[in-house]
Amino acid sequence: MMIRTVLYISEIASQDNKTICEHVSEIADTSKTNNRKKGITGVLAHDNEHFLHILEGESPILEGLLTKIESDQRNKNLQVMFDVIWAERIFQEWKVFDKTSVEHSQRFDQFLKLNMDSLALLDDAQFEVISRFAENVFH
Image (cartoon, rainbow, N blue to C red):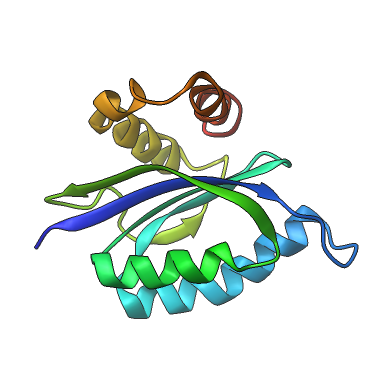
């Protein structure tokens, strides 16, 4: 089975005086269970200004999830940067990125290596955001 892989970046939207950690915790609590049931894997990371989210799964399921995420008030200006089909997954489950996890950093590096051709197609601003995540969040 072919797996659809999507990477998007969105701005974190302030809401109800909640901290970013509170937003991420809410997302994690709901998403971990729902994504496991739907066969979605990937990682969610943030840099206090943006979310970077990599999702892997069956295309119709991801399409519905992306629609739901776009309407989520905790983020705004969602921009899909990668949307590709692969023969296999990179991530084994869905998680919130943990800086202490060597595995998460390695999986992100693997994702970038597999998508080098797509990286070359990004505009400067998109490339800057992904580069900042690669340097400051994932390592």
